[in-house]
Length: 205
Ligand SMILES: Nc1ncnc2c1ncn2[C@@H]1O[C@H](COP(=O)(O)OP(=O)(O)O)[C@@H](O)[C@H]1O
Ligand SMILES: [Mg+2]
Image (cartoon, rainbow, N blue to C red):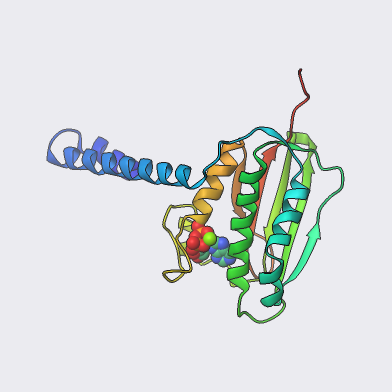
């Protein structure tokens, strides 16, 4: 969309500008459709209640317990005690963590050992945020994947294995909570994704 807008401005007036305008308009419509689609797939309203992220992560790991064992993946939980709670929708945050863990699992399945999934929580008092990281020792990200990770329908997986909507939805959920989601560089093989969420402020009654 940004590229089409840039072409439109460069072209000024005339047929090229008009074509570029049409491209931008269609891109916007496609974005709307995807947004409506993903809103539809979450059939509950976004709640706002105090959420303990450590508990959410433990629950998700429980959910994946069988799949993780079958793929012979070691799970390391580094959850700091007394993590401040966040305000949000526990089910949506559960969904966010589940998508990241599903990706980690898929990246490690059938790969040589060590296969390790690490879940980490940390408090960032300076910015009143809490963060959690999901790290794997899987195949890692190609330059192409790095550039397109969060785009809807971007997938490197075969049909039936990937829709390319996972990280797009994850980003939506992080933003719903006024937080962020990013792929972060860490030494060693595999990939790490980091979610930062504002900690729950003082109750003002
Ligand atoms: N943990 C990971 N390790 C390696 N590649 C990843 C990881 N997570 C995401 N990716 C890459 O990002 C792409 C998009 O991820 P996602 O939006 O979840 O869609 P999908 O999993 O359906 O392909 C994946 O196809 C893969 O190429
Ligand atoms: Mg996925």
